[in-house]
Every structure is written in C-alpha cells, then in structure tokens.
Image (cartoon, rainbow, N blue to C red; front, top):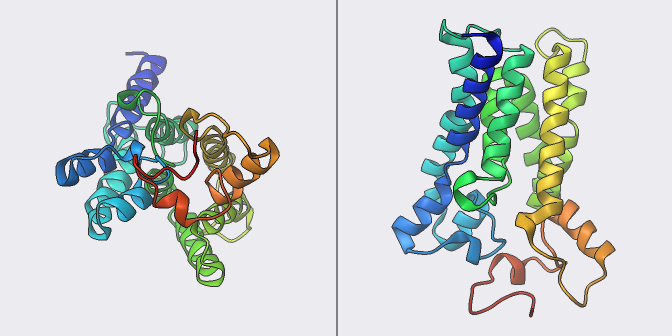
Length: 237
C-alpha cells in the first residue's frame, strides 16, 4: 500500500474511534439520558460529572485518553505496517483527526465534546512533558480562579510555547509545535461553534462569542447553564 493509502487508513481509524461518544453511551446506560439535552450539551466529562455521577468520568477518561487519543499514535508508530516516528508529521495528523472526531462525532451528527481528554491522550503518546505542563498549569489556574473553562483554555494557549523551550526534555520538532497549534485551533472552533447552537436571542452576539470562547457557555452565570435540563432551560427560546 502507498504511503498516502496508509495515512488515509490511519486517519480514518483515528477519526472513527475518537467519534465513539463514550460519555453519551455511559449516560444512556446509567441514566437513560442523552447528554446533548442536559447542561452544556457537550458529550464530555464535565457534563457527565454533573448529570450522571462524578465517578463515571473515570472509565470515560480512560477510554478517551488511551483509546481515542493515544491508540492511533501507537498504531502508527509501533505497528511495522506503518512504522512512523512518534513526532513525525504523519502521526501529528492522526492526533488532530482524533481530536476532531471527538469534537464532531460522525455518530452524533457532527456534535460532540470539547476534546480535552482526547488531546491529553495525543500528548501522552507524543509529548509527555508538554502534557504534564498543560495539566500543572491548568490545575494551578483552576486552584486560583475556580473557573475550569478559563483555566483549561489558557493552559491550552501555552502549549506551543513549551515545545520551543531549549531544554532537551521539552524541545520538540516543528511538527509537534504545529500539533499544539492545531489542538488550540480545534478547541477554539469547538467553543465558538458550540455544537452548532444558534446564538440566543436577547444577548449581544459579541457577549455570546466572548462567553463561548472564555467561559465555554452562552451566558455569564455558570449554574443555570451547567445544571439546565430539558424541563429547565437556561435560555428561553
């Protein structure tokens, strides 16, 4: 098979496996609900935590990190049929397809989660030091601000910087720096598009864009947004 054929095969695997809506499957099995109708509407860990139970994020996280995020990278590196280097451009592309698959799942009509756990899995396979710094900075910011969405996004924005530090464990080739930029781009696009949710009426578009980008929600107050249910919407349509 040609290199292009191998790439297409690996990228298709990365996208389709990452598209599996782990959190929504757990929510339906445990509580019989569709997470897209609850809270933020995201099919991810924070919504699962709020509406199904905090301990269910453990199995979800394991699958999202190691299966959806890391597995395509490991296959592309360790399976002789592929045999690419861990920091090669080919595997960086697989990582981005994995994050995109989670964010815009084929099985959920191109809706999904925020891709953070999957991105952590990609970094675990390719750039462990950068992953550790991402987690450390995010936790530090969260401990200071108690604003998870803001902390995660600011920590994401620092990812390319870590790859440029001239210290051997952190120094990375250009392909990995571009991976970090790509992860930021996918996370930004997902926040702004917000599962294709239309802009709510009665709120200036500029405020909604700011809220989506920084707070990861349409409105400023947190609790009405994350705790909303089909019978108790945060915004009246």
